[in-house]
Every structure is written in C-alpha cells, then in structure tokens.
Image (cartoon, rainbow, N blue to C red; front, side):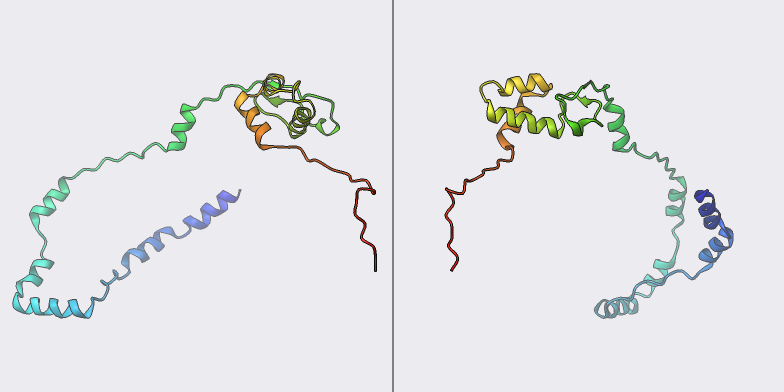
Length: 175
C-alpha cells in the first residue's frame, strides 16, 4: 500500500517537471582565477581566431561520435556470486547436554556450537577434574573441533568466588 502512494507522488506531474528542468538555463562556467584570466585575455588579443576555434564544431569528430555504439551490461554483484558459490549444507543438530532449567526453550544446538550453560559446565568440569575432562574428551562429547576446545580452555575461565572466614580477615578497629 505504501509503495503505491509513494509511486503516485513520485510520478505526479513528471512531464511538466522534466520540461521545466530541461528548459532551465544551463550553468555558467566557474569564474576563473584573476591570474589565469589576464593570461587568457592576452592570448585572445594576440590570436583572435582561438575564440572561433573553441566555439566551432568539428564535423569529423561528430561523425566519429555518431559511429560509437556502447553496449553495457551490469556486472554481477559479489554478493550474488558468493551466494551462488557457497551452497549451505543442511546443518546437523544435537540435543543439549544436561538438565538445566533455563535450557527449556532450546530444542537443538548445531554441531560445532555450544550453549552458554554448556560452556560454563565444561569449563567448570575441566577446572575441577582436568585429568578426566581433557580437551579431547570435551571435543568428542560436545561435537566440537579440537582447536576450538583448546582455545576455549586457554582463554576462558569460570568465575571464581573466594569466601574468607572472619578469623582470616584483618579487622579494622573503629576509633
């Protein structure tokens, strides 16, 4: 509906507007710098035929211009080429691991990816039991690539909370 209204406004009185634009005075050339203006006036005084030569139309060049035929085609955009080249394979999915309450809405996870809850779980398991939860076992369990798991274990850590007992704290005596 909106396109119809826009098209009607855009095409309203289009012939008269085009005629008005065509019949307008053509723009005058930009003013010349005073230093070049004086040089041009001096050259026009010495060679007055230059002014006629500039305004004269060359029939030979005009005939060459009439013989030119340009056939142009729009180049194929790179987005369309990439879309044609990369045909996506249907993704394989897996069920989420564990019974987490916030994962009720997640029905399936693509292979090679993990949810945030799973990432936190595997990081915590690796931190608590590094000999059982090795990078190879995590990659096999969650269907991830080995290099991704190694990077995950190297650059991410779980949040660690340390609780100090009241005896260990230095108590500041109020004055």
